[in-house]
Length: 550
Image 1 (cartoon, rainbow, N blue to C red):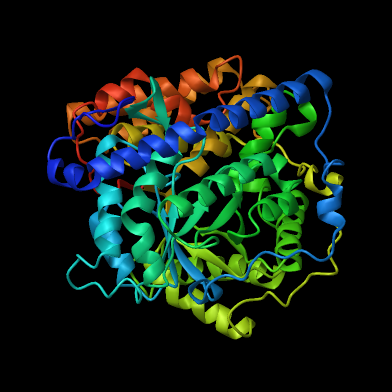
Image 2: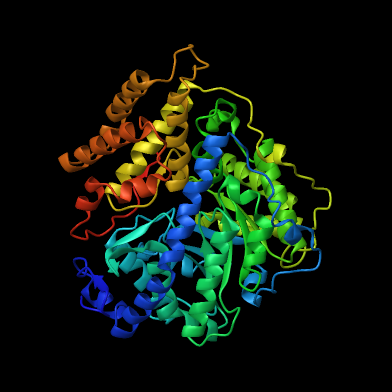
């Protein structure tokens, strides 16, 4: 499509011409061109800053700490973030990993009793051209009340829009001769078509910001928000955003991140797997940071993760910001009277109660049937809309606490599990899906990141298995990938599905044997010819793959 001078847009995916024409109007293309060209250099700068910081850590052997040049921000007791709008004050349970290209699940979420929906263009979404256009158009329909049997936008769970992270590009749009940054493509379309209506209905616009690594990246987002509000004639502070603290470096800059976004902050969020994977990303070559088997030795009760969550809650509440926990990935069995159903519910309840007791103001679930039990958990153990009054004066967190690796080794079952999760994730992406079900829980790019990161790190350090003293090396991993293929191929129903699975296995072996650690598996895949060619015709996403019986 021809747009403003300097902007090129690929033609619509098959079957989505009407949605494409609705989104990419002349005025919208002009807005996108101005947005992207205004901030493109700053995007490049923050990405180069990431590379520079990583190079410094590698060359110096230094460890991160709380920044000296921003100590005035941390020691000033008086500043606070602006209060959030009423619809954000009580968000005990959000639905997570909701890729809006899945129209049926999106509608069910809109009809649910949840207080919020993480409308996900990142971890739970596969960013094919088809999925982005379908997903953004579905958000437009929800905001403008175009779905039948769905309540008004002011009455549905509040939409927390999650654009792609800075590491992703949109290959189907070129601006001034460069591929558009993925988050600006998503954010720009969502704001242009939905921002004003959400504001008028007192229901947004609200965002999640993924994979922010420094306060400089938060400053960039704040500048983008200010510029966008001015362009769209929205009051300053209309946009609110929750920053996901998914990186160990960001954990040392939480107050600074809140400060940069103090007019636009909806708080901070803590997870587990992207955050854990960031240790391999930043320190993977260092034996002192060998991360043990995540299935057996890594959970939110470990010192490094518990300290991270405690510090996040304390930081947020000290500054009047909301603190939210991660997503419960477990799926309830269909038989509500079965022992397994009770076991899963008890497990989720125990883990989420730990977060509530730590002071979080809300968290996410994937399974819609967990919404009401988890809301009841909040009712039983908290008072009021949130826990902002829990200031956590008892918390004192040092750099050593945040950087303390849990003890433990590597098991054969843990290695096999990480391999299977990695293969099935790439297989899902090649199918146009951003998440899938495996052994009773949902898996997305966050669990794929930690899985392939651990395999890479264990090979790098030739770690010994607890089971039989074998070394984790190329030979062993290659054998185990072949075994996984044999087990998983049984579920392939066509030659094409079998080819896709074998291709995924080849790609996993390739990525875990790289000399240098690929920073993000999503970046690696989205720039791979196999992925790009498999979606060049804009094939539509199927329903989420269920491998839970494996």
